[in-house]
Image 1 (cartoon, helix red, strand yellow):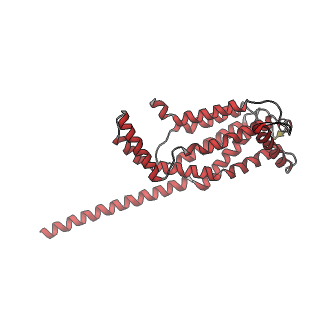
Image 2 (tube, one colour):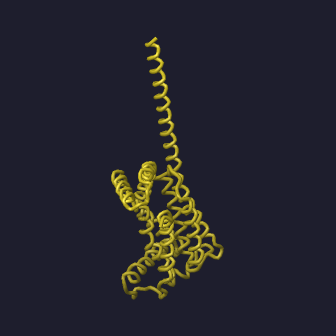
Length: 281
């Protein structure tokens, strides 16, 4: 039970990626204007039409179409991801208080744990943070890359389209796009961990990129291209809105100011003590 609690984020991420693989394999019939149902007749079909329309603007280059559509989607998701990153940063600032609560309620009995949860919720509420918001961007993106995968694989003109060295409907024969997708995912994870004040679970930093590589090297190059562009966009967005180098400098300056204030307090205390001794003499 404790293992599950400690690894819940890892298990959640693996479950999401497993769901992607499962849903991606669903449905093989081509989609067209005659397709019915909300998923196939509306979402997948219109997703494919959007990619084809954008691709036609670039001389029927379907790879460019996927890149442009991905960038547009990620741009629309900026409010979600920015809020998520801000929420995570605020939660990270609460780490010292969380450690104090754990020390205050060390017992594992039901009554103590109930008090701990109440204090924890009060802490989150007072700070205005939501511990479950970290999964929001992933939950929002899941239908997008599932629809992308199926729209490419189930639309003949996209499934047979070429982009650079790959056929969009087939896996990358040289594994370049999956590796790039994994590297951008790793870069984003590292940048996010750099901006945190406390040490976090390093397993997630490396497991997620490996899972991305594992999934994309087995599926279509279109999905690998989506992950490459999407996670590359995440790296740029993090550097612009949650720059860890800037956060580290600000944190270091704040710590130095606090240290200087403490040194001045001690010097003032020593002067006061010395002055009192001189008066007594």
